[in-house]
Image 1 (cartoon, rainbow, N blue to C red):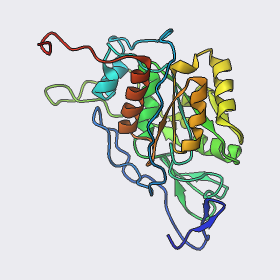
Image 2: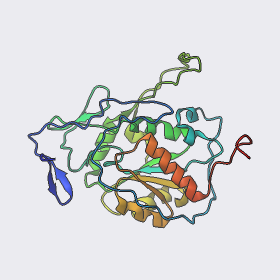
Image 3: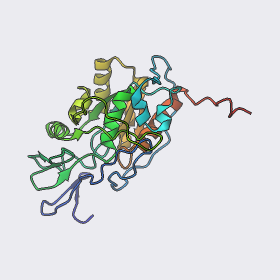
Image 4: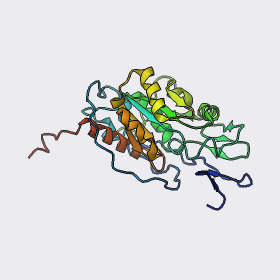
Length: 279
Protein backbone atom coordinates (compact mmCIF):
# COMPACT_ATOMS: atom_id res chain seq x y z
CA UNK A 1 0.00 0.00 0.00
CA UNK A 2 1.93 2.97 -1.27
CA UNK A 3 -0.05 5.51 0.69
CA UNK A 4 0.91 4.05 4.07
CA UNK A 5 4.26 4.78 5.69
CA UNK A 6 5.58 1.98 7.89
CA UNK A 7 7.13 3.45 11.02
CA UNK A 8 8.02 1.15 13.90
CA UNK A 9 5.53 -1.45 12.70
CA UNK A 10 2.71 1.09 12.59
CA UNK A 11 1.21 2.45 9.38
CA UNK A 12 0.87 6.23 9.29
CA UNK A 13 -1.34 7.72 6.63
CA UNK A 14 -0.58 10.95 4.76
CA UNK A 15 -3.55 13.17 5.49
CA UNK A 16 -4.03 14.16 1.84
CA UNK A 17 -5.70 10.83 1.11
CA UNK A 18 -9.33 10.11 1.80
CA UNK A 19 -9.91 6.57 3.06
CA UNK A 20 -12.96 5.17 4.79
CA UNK A 21 -13.12 2.43 7.41
CA UNK A 22 -16.90 2.44 7.56
CA UNK A 23 -18.66 -0.88 7.28
CA UNK A 24 -21.12 -0.04 4.54
CA UNK A 25 -23.17 -3.21 4.82
CA UNK A 26 -24.06 -3.85 8.47
CA UNK A 27 -25.65 -7.28 8.36
CA UNK A 28 -27.52 -8.91 11.24
CA UNK A 29 -28.08 -12.41 9.94
CA UNK A 30 -28.96 -15.23 12.27
CA UNK A 31 -27.82 -17.87 12.71
CA UNK A 32 -25.48 -17.85 9.71
CA UNK A 33 -22.41 -15.64 10.31
CA UNK A 34 -22.13 -12.72 7.91
CA UNK A 35 -19.21 -12.70 5.52
CA UNK A 36 -19.64 -8.98 4.83
CA UNK A 37 -17.25 -7.64 7.43
CA UNK A 38 -14.42 -5.37 6.39
CA UNK A 39 -11.51 -7.33 4.93
CA UNK A 40 -8.09 -6.13 5.96
CA UNK A 41 -4.69 -7.55 4.94
CA UNK A 42 -3.84 -10.74 6.80
CA UNK A 43 -1.08 -10.05 9.28
CA UNK A 44 -0.72 -13.15 11.45
CA UNK A 45 -0.99 -16.88 11.11
CA UNK A 46 -2.65 -19.18 13.60
CA UNK A 47 -0.25 -21.42 15.49
CA UNK A 48 -1.39 -24.56 17.27
CA UNK A 49 -2.64 -23.71 20.75
CA UNK A 50 -1.21 -25.72 23.65
CA UNK A 51 -3.57 -28.03 25.53
CA UNK A 52 -5.14 -26.68 28.69
CA UNK A 53 -5.00 -28.42 32.03
CA UNK A 54 -7.49 -26.10 33.72
CA UNK A 55 -10.28 -27.43 35.88
CA UNK A 56 -13.90 -27.61 34.72
CA UNK A 57 -15.48 -26.06 37.78
CA UNK A 58 -17.87 -23.12 37.97
CA UNK A 59 -19.24 -23.25 34.44
CA UNK A 60 -22.62 -21.81 33.55
CA UNK A 61 -24.49 -23.78 30.90
CA UNK A 62 -26.87 -21.75 28.74
CA UNK A 63 -30.53 -22.24 29.55
CA UNK A 64 -33.04 -23.35 26.96
CA UNK A 65 -35.41 -20.71 28.36
CA UNK A 66 -33.15 -17.88 27.20
CA UNK A 67 -34.69 -16.30 24.05
CA UNK A 68 -31.32 -14.80 23.07
CA UNK A 69 -30.12 -18.30 22.22
CA UNK A 70 -32.32 -18.27 19.13
CA UNK A 71 -30.16 -15.45 17.75
CA UNK A 72 -26.91 -17.39 18.13
CA UNK A 73 -25.39 -19.70 15.54
CA UNK A 74 -26.54 -23.29 16.31
CA UNK A 75 -23.15 -24.41 17.63
CA UNK A 76 -23.28 -21.68 20.30
CA UNK A 77 -26.95 -22.14 21.17
CA UNK A 78 -26.66 -25.84 22.05
CA UNK A 79 -27.99 -26.01 25.65
CA UNK A 80 -25.97 -29.17 26.33
CA UNK A 81 -22.69 -27.24 25.98
CA UNK A 82 -21.47 -24.33 28.15
CA UNK A 83 -20.43 -20.84 27.14
CA UNK A 84 -17.53 -18.91 28.70
CA UNK A 85 -18.52 -16.73 31.63
CA UNK A 86 -16.45 -13.80 30.32
CA UNK A 87 -15.59 -13.08 26.68
CA UNK A 88 -12.97 -10.35 26.25
CA UNK A 89 -12.09 -8.47 23.07
CA UNK A 90 -9.10 -6.45 21.97
CA UNK A 91 -10.07 -3.28 20.05
CA UNK A 92 -7.68 -2.57 17.16
CA UNK A 93 -8.03 -5.00 14.25
CA UNK A 94 -10.34 -7.10 16.42
CA UNK A 95 -13.53 -5.08 16.92
CA UNK A 96 -12.60 -2.39 14.39
CA UNK A 97 -10.25 -2.38 11.36
CA UNK A 98 -7.72 0.28 12.37
CA UNK A 99 -5.37 1.45 15.11
CA UNK A 100 -7.29 4.08 17.00
CA UNK A 101 -4.09 5.76 18.25
CA UNK A 102 -2.53 5.93 14.77
CA UNK A 103 -5.23 6.24 12.13
CA UNK A 104 -7.85 8.37 13.89
CA UNK A 105 -7.39 12.13 14.23
CA UNK A 106 -9.74 13.90 16.67
CA UNK A 107 -12.18 15.50 16.97
CA UNK A 108 -14.71 12.81 16.10
CA UNK A 109 -18.30 13.33 14.98
CA UNK A 110 -20.82 10.45 14.75
CA UNK A 111 -23.12 10.04 11.78
CA UNK A 112 -26.89 10.26 12.27
CA UNK A 113 -27.28 6.52 12.78
CA UNK A 114 -24.25 6.27 15.10
CA UNK A 115 -22.86 3.43 12.98
CA UNK A 116 -19.61 5.29 12.31
CA UNK A 117 -17.78 8.47 13.28
CA UNK A 118 -15.85 10.93 11.11
CA UNK A 119 -12.50 12.32 12.20
CA UNK A 120 -10.84 15.68 11.55
CA UNK A 121 -9.90 14.71 7.99
CA UNK A 122 -13.29 13.34 7.01
CA UNK A 123 -12.44 9.66 7.33
CA UNK A 124 -15.09 7.30 8.70
CA UNK A 125 -14.45 4.73 11.41
CA UNK A 126 -16.70 1.95 12.65
CA UNK A 127 -16.87 -1.69 13.70
CA UNK A 128 -16.39 -4.77 11.57
CA UNK A 129 -19.84 -5.65 10.25
CA UNK A 130 -20.67 -8.60 12.54
CA UNK A 131 -19.54 -6.78 15.68
CA UNK A 132 -22.78 -4.88 16.51
CA UNK A 133 -24.85 -8.08 16.44
CA UNK A 134 -22.16 -9.92 18.45
CA UNK A 135 -22.06 -7.23 21.13
CA UNK A 136 -25.86 -7.17 21.27
CA UNK A 137 -26.42 -10.92 21.47
CA UNK A 138 -23.63 -12.38 23.59
CA UNK A 139 -24.52 -10.62 26.88
CA UNK A 140 -28.15 -11.70 26.46
CA UNK A 141 -27.07 -15.30 25.95
CA UNK A 142 -25.27 -15.45 29.29
CA UNK A 143 -21.60 -14.41 29.06
CA UNK A 144 -20.30 -11.08 30.29
CA UNK A 145 -18.21 -9.21 27.73
CA UNK A 146 -15.18 -7.00 28.27
CA UNK A 147 -12.33 -5.14 26.58
CA UNK A 148 -8.56 -5.50 27.00
CA UNK A 149 -6.62 -3.00 24.88
CA UNK A 150 -3.12 -1.59 25.20
CA UNK A 151 -3.81 1.42 22.95
CA UNK A 152 -1.89 4.58 23.72
CA UNK A 153 -5.06 6.63 23.06
CA UNK A 154 -7.51 5.28 25.67
CA UNK A 155 -9.55 8.49 25.76
CA UNK A 156 -10.06 8.48 22.01
CA UNK A 157 -11.00 4.79 22.08
CA UNK A 158 -13.63 5.45 24.74
CA UNK A 159 -14.96 8.44 22.80
CA UNK A 160 -15.44 6.25 19.75
CA UNK A 161 -17.14 3.54 21.82
CA UNK A 162 -19.55 6.21 23.08
CA UNK A 163 -20.39 7.36 19.56
CA UNK A 164 -20.89 3.91 18.04
CA UNK A 165 -24.29 2.49 18.98
CA UNK A 166 -25.47 -1.12 19.10
CA UNK A 167 -28.91 -1.40 17.45
CA UNK A 168 -31.44 -4.13 18.06
CA UNK A 169 -31.07 -6.80 15.36
CA UNK A 170 -34.11 -7.72 13.27
CA UNK A 171 -36.35 -10.33 14.86
CA UNK A 172 -35.98 -13.70 13.11
CA UNK A 173 -38.94 -14.67 10.93
CA UNK A 174 -41.37 -17.34 12.05
CA UNK A 175 -41.33 -20.78 10.44
CA UNK A 176 -44.04 -19.70 8.01
CA UNK A 177 -41.90 -16.75 6.88
CA UNK A 178 -43.96 -14.07 8.62
CA UNK A 179 -42.60 -11.47 10.99
CA UNK A 180 -43.69 -11.94 14.62
CA UNK A 181 -45.97 -9.33 16.13
CA UNK A 182 -44.10 -6.61 18.04
CA UNK A 183 -44.16 -6.91 21.81
CA UNK A 184 -43.81 -3.84 23.99
CA UNK A 185 -41.78 -0.74 23.20
CA UNK A 186 -38.97 -0.99 20.66
CA UNK A 187 -35.56 -1.27 22.30
CA UNK A 188 -33.39 1.81 21.88
CA UNK A 189 -29.86 1.43 20.52
CA UNK A 190 -27.22 1.32 23.23
CA UNK A 191 -23.82 2.98 23.27
CA UNK A 192 -21.11 0.40 22.62
CA UNK A 193 -19.35 1.70 25.71
CA UNK A 194 -22.30 0.61 27.85
CA UNK A 195 -22.64 -2.98 26.63
CA UNK A 196 -19.39 -3.89 28.39
CA UNK A 197 -20.89 -2.96 31.75
CA UNK A 198 -17.70 -1.25 32.86
CA UNK A 199 -15.44 -4.25 32.17
CA UNK A 200 -12.93 -2.29 30.13
CA UNK A 201 -9.17 -2.30 30.61
CA UNK A 202 -8.00 0.26 28.03
CA UNK A 203 -4.50 1.59 28.67
CA UNK A 204 -0.90 0.89 27.59
CA UNK A 205 0.73 -2.04 29.30
CA UNK A 206 0.60 -5.79 29.54
CA UNK A 207 -2.50 -7.81 28.67
CA UNK A 208 -1.75 -10.04 31.64
CA UNK A 209 -2.32 -7.03 33.90
CA UNK A 210 -5.56 -6.29 32.05
CA UNK A 211 -6.80 -9.79 32.81
CA UNK A 212 -5.69 -9.70 36.42
CA UNK A 213 -7.80 -6.56 36.84
CA UNK A 214 -10.79 -8.16 35.10
CA UNK A 215 -10.51 -11.27 37.27
CA UNK A 216 -10.33 -9.19 40.44
CA UNK A 217 -13.38 -7.13 39.46
CA UNK A 218 -15.55 -10.03 38.31
CA UNK A 219 -14.40 -12.93 40.47
CA UNK A 220 -14.55 -15.11 37.34
CA UNK A 221 -11.84 -17.76 37.08
CA UNK A 222 -9.36 -17.37 34.24
CA UNK A 223 -10.36 -20.80 32.93
CA UNK A 224 -13.86 -19.44 32.34
CA UNK A 225 -12.55 -16.60 30.13
CA UNK A 226 -12.20 -16.47 26.33
CA UNK A 227 -10.08 -13.76 24.70
CA UNK A 228 -10.14 -12.58 21.07
CA UNK A 229 -7.05 -10.71 19.86
CA UNK A 230 -5.19 -10.15 16.57
CA UNK A 231 -1.63 -10.32 17.97
CA UNK A 232 0.04 -13.68 18.64
CA UNK A 233 2.26 -12.16 21.34
CA UNK A 234 -0.81 -11.77 23.55
CA UNK A 235 -1.01 -15.53 23.93
CA UNK A 236 1.03 -14.92 27.07
CA UNK A 237 -2.38 -14.41 28.73
CA UNK A 238 -2.82 -18.18 28.48
CA UNK A 239 -0.24 -18.56 31.26
CA UNK A 240 -3.07 -17.40 33.55
CA UNK A 241 -5.47 -20.06 32.25
CA UNK A 242 -7.29 -17.83 29.76
CA UNK A 243 -8.12 -19.31 26.33
CA UNK A 244 -7.05 -16.93 23.56
CA UNK A 245 -8.32 -17.17 19.98
CA UNK A 246 -6.23 -15.41 17.35
CA UNK A 247 -8.21 -13.47 14.72
CA UNK A 248 -6.64 -12.30 11.48
CA UNK A 249 -9.46 -10.37 9.80
CA UNK A 250 -11.44 -9.06 12.75
CA UNK A 251 -14.15 -10.67 14.84
CA UNK A 252 -17.06 -12.28 13.03
CA UNK A 253 -19.66 -14.83 14.08
CA UNK A 254 -17.47 -17.46 12.45
CA UNK A 255 -14.52 -16.48 14.66
CA UNK A 256 -16.75 -16.47 17.74
CA UNK A 257 -17.82 -20.04 16.93
CA UNK A 258 -14.21 -21.15 16.47
CA UNK A 259 -13.10 -19.50 19.70
CA UNK A 260 -15.91 -21.00 21.76
CA UNK A 261 -15.23 -24.42 20.20
CA UNK A 262 -11.56 -24.16 21.25
CA UNK A 263 -12.53 -23.07 24.76
CA UNK A 264 -14.94 -26.01 25.10
CA UNK A 265 -12.35 -28.45 23.76
CA UNK A 266 -9.79 -27.31 26.31
CA UNK A 267 -12.32 -27.70 29.08
CA UNK A 268 -13.15 -31.23 27.99
CA UNK A 269 -16.63 -30.51 26.66
CA UNK A 270 -17.70 -32.27 23.49
CA UNK A 271 -21.12 -32.88 22.06
CA UNK A 272 -22.56 -36.24 23.06
CA UNK A 273 -24.06 -38.26 20.19
CA UNK A 274 -27.83 -38.54 20.07
CA UNK A 275 -29.60 -41.91 20.16
CA UNK A 276 -30.05 -41.75 16.39
CA UNK A 277 -26.32 -41.18 15.91
CA UNK A 278 -25.27 -44.15 18.05
CA UNK A 279 -24.33 -47.38 16.17
